[in-house]
Amino acid sequence: MVLGKINNFYIIASESAVIEVIGGKYIRDINPAEIIVIEKRQIKKSFLYKTPKKQSTCIFEQVYFSRPDSIMFYKTVKEARVKMGKFLAKQMKDVKVDVVIPVPDTGYFAALGFSRESNILFENGFVKNHYVGRSFIKPSQNLRDLTANLKLRPIKEVIKDKEIILIDDSIVRGTTSKKIVNMLRDVGAKKIHFALSCPPIICPCYYGIDTPSKEYLIATNHSIEEMKEYLNVNTLTFLNLNNLVKSCSFDNVKSNIFCTACFTGKYPTKISKNTYKRVN
Ligand code: SF4
Image (tube, rainbow, N blue to C red; front, top):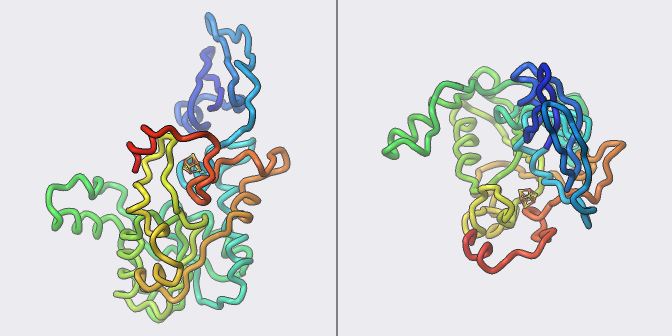
């Protein structure tokens, strides 16, 4: 949570971009277990409800959920994503390609970081239609496919006969990634190296994030080689956990404050039987 101000009013929001969107000013992050008492537009006091045993901030915020212009730990999320891309480029230093292409919009800054680190050309290979509604609420499969096609279209001139690094934030079920790869193949991509700015998601989230149960997570049930075959890509690379944590840790942030359970299965709290049953 973050604290901000607009005119004489304080605002508390889940991310700083919200405050700026409505014309306010971000003041600071709110600490875990911190209580801020605001009365008559004044901060009366702020104190810790109790000292947290251990901070476990969701690392997926920086990978995907938060807006890139939001501030986390006094840095923009964009900065963390650029670092993820730079680390990915280091992991893939032997792959030689013509162009780096992001999956819009969440792959954008990681692809930019990759391009800066590797000196490989960055190109927008897709046009995204922001005005098409969500495909999964359409009543028939035909309509859903049509909506998905209208939403994202590849730019043939950028892709044809090229060896490509395609960068996205993560793979959950794998179905969307497969469609995107097929689009690139259809317009003549020579080779596709698919890279993700986080490790494989192998476990569901029990803290309110709507990830599917294990059964639907492609990385839980398939090896990297099997996923590569399924997605029809030439190589498949995930940012390793160590590099992800380094990307999200800035000078003022310790590397042990993150929840990384969806990549490791090591949950920072006990999961009750009921919660476990509900999610699985
Ligand atoms: S399990 Fe994953 S998505 Fe859920 S809070 Fe932890 S890091 Fe975030």
